[in-house]
Image 1 (cartoon, helix red, strand yellow):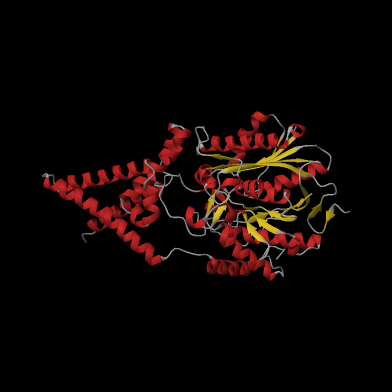
Image 2 (image 1 turned 45 degrees about the vertical axis):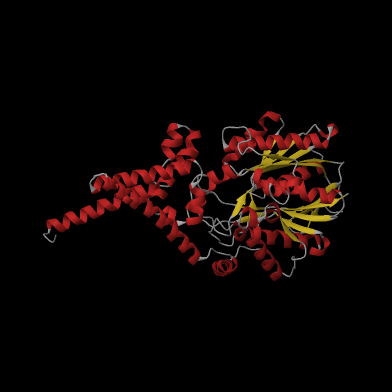
Length: 336
Length: 155
């Protein structure tokens, strides 16, 4: 069996297994449709800390510890961490994971980071460079709003296409064996820019990247959407979903049967007033841990394509008039 | 599609995005803004009338009106009530002096954790800064025009 597949994909020969997944979310996420499925709900938005950034770090640390705990004692010796968040210079990650004293690869792929972490972790395990690794990401509504938009107390109106940053952290222990889910393949994504400059319509910014990665994945593996129980994007939201389905149709793929979006699953858009859906590094990570992974472990879903999506912008690039390119990484997760 | 797309395709995509992106109903937004802005103005007028009834002159009454509205807005910002009013009322809450007060109070609260100098000191005007700078600049410019016109004997 080939390891290098098609133009940009990877097929894992000894599929690294996802031994455990842990999810910790904030109050709003806990009140959402997936509320009962999360491992822990933090009622305090500050998580007992003094700042939003420290709160996000605390979430990451808790999720990391919980994932290792859930994996059991035989997997507790995690050798490497693959982690990231949305904040400048990855401070939520570095300050959150520092106490674990485990070598860290800090990753940035905006909200697609969990995909990047999972595939790099899987490559490390399959390559024999490590037995157990931990992949995790986090986001926090407070820290993200402060960095990318306005202080929380500032009054303003959000457009209907805007998404709501998920407060939460999701963590996964990957190992050569164990557990009921495995990563059988991956398609790392390219930076795709369709020239959208509206940073509050991130679904429109990221949908072309999601489409590019999904179509390339299907071509590389010679599969059709029907080969998957679901194709699940990270945080396109309702606007991004419409666009993705249209773009994919133009390339000859009908994804409407299989497509789900973590951002649309995590909130009740009407009742929770989140507009287009959830977003952030934590969005896809906690949805994978709490909702998707259990479905695969119990064999309700046999094979899914998990495609977290990221919008690659900073306040500087935005103010300097740059467009908002997107990126999406696809990971194949199967029951075993 | 695998290659970087050209300007024309980007334009087409942006046009397409406009079609599929939902927007707020302009008329409903305007009605809400009118209502909220109107209420704030009524409160202001109420303060003015009361101050005048106490025998204060027009200018002093105006100062009290501004100060009390700013105080009210800052209090509501601190209690995290103002964002809900602004979300509902839009420009109706943001255009009056209440919006300006909120724009200064919100960063003060948020950046307090980054210290008195680099936090509050440097960042308190991140939102209101442009209004202050260009407000003062415009007054200076108008003053200059006024002075020139006066020198020329036109005014």
